[in-house]
Image 1 (cartoon, rainbow, N blue to C red):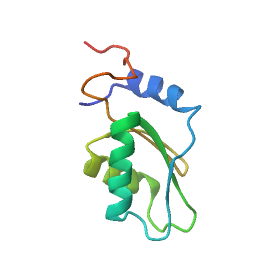
Image 2 (tube, helix red, strand yellow):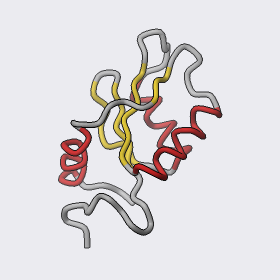
Image 3 (cartoon, helix red, strand yellow):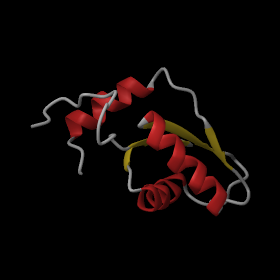
Image 4 (tube, rainbow, N blue to C red):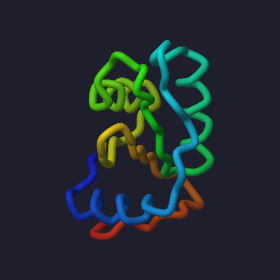
Length: 100
């Protein structure tokens, strides 16, 4: 599933009120962190991840790796914050605009 720019903008506005529930630090992406993010996306659909200053990797690079490993979409990377989305197969909380 690929998001349109309109859907990304809408999801980004929905994420404004969310707090980052995960932090990527010095050890970057560990298998445990990816597994925890996977579980959170499964339950919440839309999450924020914060990249700490002591992380050597680029936030956009980290966002791409997380999205690939969790089969989610990167909505937006703003500074050191990453917004990720994966729609639930049923009982979704987010009815995307422009969805057929």
